[in-house]
Amino acid sequence: MSYRSGNSEVWVCNSDGSSPVQVTSFRGPEVTTPRWSPDGRRIAFDSDAVGREFDIWVIGADGGKPVRMTTHPANDGNPSWSHDGRWIYFDSRRTGEQQVWKMPADGGEAIQVTRDGGWAPIESPDSKFLYYTKSLGNTTLWRIPLDGGQATKVLEGLSIYINLAIADKGIYFVPWPDAASLSSIRSSIEFLDLQTNQIRRVATSEGPIDGGLAFSPDGQWMLYTKYARLPHQLELRLVENFR
Image (cartoon, one colour):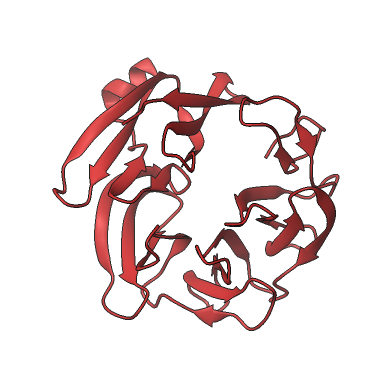
């Protein structure tokens, strides 16, 4: 997502940052939280392009006409894909409480997933769990088995909902900064090992990391967003051999 056109729009580029191409052209409404489909052919995102509330949209990775996936009058946001590409998860207040929902990726009736509150859902790589947060910032991370069962808390002190990436063996995340970090404007990327429940630091950054984490399919690169010139501009950065 970039404001380089003057408005928030979805863009794509090569893995080295070259050849950026604008994908959406809403020209004014907010566009946030783009997520690639597993096959790389589509991008889901949320936008307030129609009405006051946000809806879930999908567009082809090479552009074209975006498709509005939700039309409920409640706010729907933060979409992500199931790993088989059949479902799009999202959060919504359509019951009066913020909960996680899922809908068929080609359109259809939404199904409620959580009952204890939830934001920003992400499916685990093995498709056994759904991870979600309890708020957008300085929050806790939870997970629920997708075949049924009780939700459990996994992590405390997550900085913001998009500052995490779920891997096979654990979770990469940016913690909420302590007082020392705030005074020096430093950030770190941590790794929670789900087998040992131990946390280790894998990278540090001068300046806040505040725009999301992702890692490459081969597991060799970590992509993160940091402020380049406070307080308005963000840059994408790559970390090599972050393990």
